[in-house]
Length: 409
Image 1 (cartoon, rainbow, N blue to C red):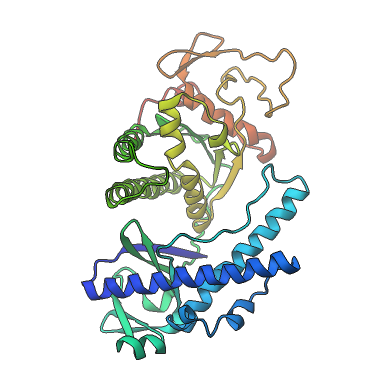
Image 2: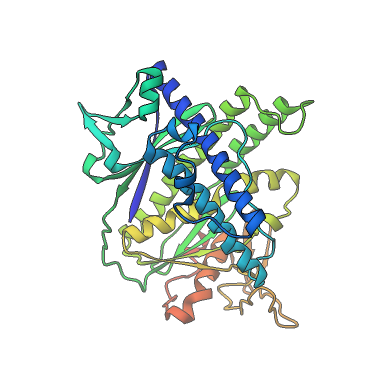
């Protein structure tokens, strides 16, 4: 299992200029490789091989401007894009995809990420040395540049370093080996997670715990960003971009990344502290495409990276030996957990089905006995019920008290 760590590069101007040059050449080489791959496909209806572009473009000036390993990695991404298109096209023809995939297209003028495999890196005086191509040395009398080695990583564990340009910034992404640490948690203990908007994640377990991750802060971050972006784009042509837009976009993205990492860690730590070995995450495919919550809520909901959070929780779960299950969440908010309502699968609701309770104002759910519980906790409990029979789970400790939680983290 591999982990990634991104670090913002804040190096002297001459190093930043080298990074800009390298990433610019990588962008041009990617387009050259894609042009060749497209022409082969259009004329012969054949897909390029894994090493075809390396052979055909080795005399290209942009190839020579990069270290050979970096140029090969850039062209490999063209091959991977074509391969992905071929597989998605086959799935679409079988009816497994709704929309026809688009053919890989050229990148706009700008910068593209570069990747250095471990064997081409050296550690010198606690700095990682990145070598440049022979052609660059002949042109500019430069043979390498250096970046600081992260203090929390070992050089021996690093497998690859990527230089990623994004919104006027450069990031060094360190890919390193991770050892799984199976904690031997009880997989009969389960945590159900219901994603939402104001309550980003509502969590209920069958060991008698429940809590809510507040989403209002992220919602306000998105609204402020969208308001600023709209002001800057007012009266400008479609596709307008500026340094100010890049600055506020990068700030917003960092806030989202921080929220995803901290929330995923909080969820997994809760499982470790309470001997919970299974996580059930409620998720409907293409939920963001079909969402219609009104103009303001759509703007906030679609921008909040819940899918990325789900994937991050799944990654951390694998690291600690926690079973991660994704299940569809249709009718979990309508059915009453305490009344043991039947929970239909999406599109298979029985004729005449009706919930024993109903949602009321202020985020509450009223059961058939006129008990008021938290509506999102009711949904999280029903998400566990979706898989309870399959996993043979004991839900006796998920009671009225657990579903009336008011703690918000």
